[in-house]
Image 1 (cartoon, helix red, strand yellow):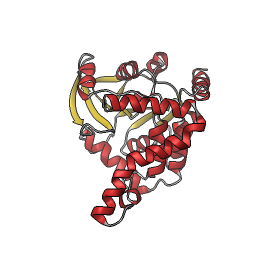
Image 2 (cartoon, rainbow, N blue to C red):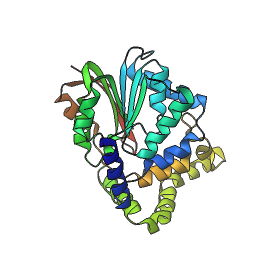
Image 3 (cartoon, one colour):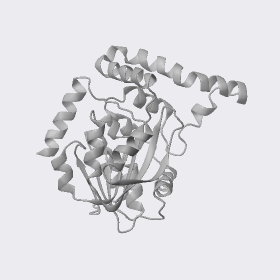
Length: 280
């Protein structure tokens, strides 16, 4: 019943223009997923966690998206529980499990919300709680961080990434994203304008320095397989949307019994800052 209610809630938010369907992009992404992308996901996960494997570890992938990092964690030996609010994302993760771990009892996938305290409580606790690029898309970021953090065992790891707060620029993008979802007729215009804004300088730089205006575009996302256009749509449409300065995330988690183990910032840019915390 909880899953059905979650699906219904997701549908209402999409129809009302209050939520972007991230799962549509992930469905497209899975068509091009290759072994090299999975290996890169494993490598990046281990680098941030400072571990060579996840054997004997329960991992929670909160907001699993394509399911790529759930797959990476499973291949590294973890027992994985994946969930997402978007039913298409749930279907993507299920497809990856079908391809690589059919009928596996060590990888469970469900529909659920990070804002559903009862659902999260039912899952128990985990040695690693992972939520990359998710919690700022919930509509209540700080509550989402708090709820998911409760699932970390003492001594466990909390790995999240949150969009960087750029002040006025972030507020403008919030309005763009909301408009994209609320007014479908304006989507082509918003995408073209964003393409020129975000890719124009790079294209000119590639032309002047490399003699090839589309060098970066053609080589974009080689490590993870995401096409630049699909990433653009994901960025422009990604609503709800929230941001935070690194120090705000640090203080929030510190007050809840977490110690910062590793930080990777985006250099004040448009992307996400990554945080690895340890629970006391």
